[in-house]
Image (tube, rainbow, N blue to C red; front, top):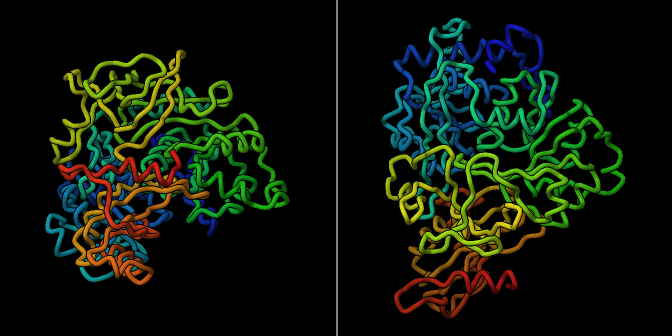
Amino acid sequence: MHLGAVAAQTPDRPAVIMAGSGRVITYRELDEESNRLARLLHAEGLRPGDHIAFMLENHPLFLAVAWAAQRSGLYYTAISPRLQADELAYIVDNCEAKVFVSSAALAGVATSITAGTPRVARRLMLDGVAEGFDSYEKAVSAHPGEPLPDECEGVDMLYSSGTTGRPKGVKPTLSRAPMGTPGPLLQLIQFLFDPAPGSVYLSPAPLYHAAPLRYCMTFQRLGATIVVMERFDAEGALAAIERYGVTHSQWVPTHFIRMLKLPEETRRKHDLSSLRYAIHAAAPCPIPVKRAMLDWWGPVVHEYYAGTEGNGFLYAGPRDWLAHPGTVGRPLLGVVHILDENGDELPPGEHGTVYFSDGPRFEYHGDPRKTADSLDPKGRGWSTLGDIGYLDEEGFLYLTDRRSYMIISGGVNIYPQEAENVLAVHPKVADVAVLGVPHPEMGEEVKAVVQPASPGEAGPELEAELIAYCRERLAHYKCPRSVDFRDELPRHPTGKLYKRLLKAEYWGT
C-alpha cells in the first residue's frame, strides 16, 4: 500500500512498461524518481495542501510526477495535452499551481501560457528545454532519491468541462493521512478485482483521465506492473495482452467497438487467456457491444459507474449484467436515490435525477454555486453528477440520459456549452445549438445546428468556416464535426432552447 514499501521488497520488478517502445521503469527507479521530484518540490517551498499541475503525453515518467505530489501531501492536476493555449492557461492558473511540468513534445502549447500563469514559480520540461522552462532531468538530479520525512497522502484535483463555458476542478478533501493509508478506491479494487503483486494492468487510455490515473497508481500500491499504451491501437492492445500476460485492464466502450471491428482472424490469433478482469466505465456501453465482448472474452467483463467527483461507486459483474442487461450496477460506495424535480424520492421504475448520499464529499474549486447546484433541493447534502436514470426492484441502476446534455465521445466527456459559446459570437451565426449525435464507433460525435445570420450563406463553405473558427479556440475534440443549418431553432418565447427536441430528431426518440 506504499510505493516505497513495494520498491524495498521488489526493487527490480517492472513498475511501468511502455507498450510501444518497450521502455521499463522498475519500482526502484519509480520510487527514487518520485522522491527526487518530491524533494525538489519541497525545496521550492511547497507544503501539504499546495498545488502542482502537469501536462504530459503518456510519458514513461508520467506516474513518477503524480507520485511525487501524492507522497508530498499536495494537490495535483493532470491536464489533457489536447487543449488549446487559453484552456490550458485557465486550468493552470485556476488550480493555483506553483509548479508546472510538461515535455518537449508539447513545448509549443506549454510555452505559450507563461504570461497567463503568473502564479507558477517553477516550470520544468522533460526531454529537452524551452523558453521559460528548466530541464526536468537536471533539476531533479540535484536531489537525493530518499523519501521526505513525514510523508503524507496527497490527492488529485482533476478538471471536468464546465456546462457554462469553463472547466471546473473537482476538489476532494485532503486527508494528509500518513503515506500508505488505504483509501476507498484501493479497498474497492481489492474487494472486486483480486489484484496481487504479480498482476499486470493494461492502461490503453490517456493517463490524464481520472480512471486511468487513479487505477494505475492504486495497482502500483499493490505491486502490480502497469503496461501503458502510448496511444490506443485495437490490434496493439490485443498483442499487449498476449505479450505481457495482462491480468487486469480498463476500457471504454469505444475500445470494445474498435476491437470488435477487427477481422475475425486478427481477433482470434492473439492469446488472451491471461486476462482475468476487463473493467469498463466512462460511457454507456451499447447492449449488443457488451454481449459481443462477453461472447468473445468470456465472463471477465466488469462494469462500474462513478465520476471524477468520487461521490459514489456502482458495480455490475458479468453475471449481474447478464441478469440485468443494460444496468450500470448496484452501489458499493454511497446510497443511490432517484429524485424528481422537487427533490422527492421516486419508486423503482420511475425516471429521475440520480443522487448519492453517504459518500465522500467534494467541492468544485472556486465555484460555490456549482457545488451548491450539485446538491439535492431539500438540503440533505445528497450530490448528483447530473445523470438521469431509474432503479429496478433489486436496486440496479439504469441510465437513461446524459448529464445536462453532456456528450460522451469515445469515453471522453464533452460539454456542448463551450462550443456554443464560441460559435454564438461568430458574425455569421444568429443562433446555435451543439449536441451529440449517434456515431457507430465513438458512441456520439459533436454536431452544431446553426441558424445563419443570412440564410443564403448556409452551405459547405460556411460549415467549414465555423468548424475552423471553433478549432482555433477550443481543443478539436470539443468542436463540431459537422454543421446542419436551420431557418430557426426551437426556443421558448423566454429564450430557453428546447435542445431535447433537437436531440430527439437525431436519435429517433
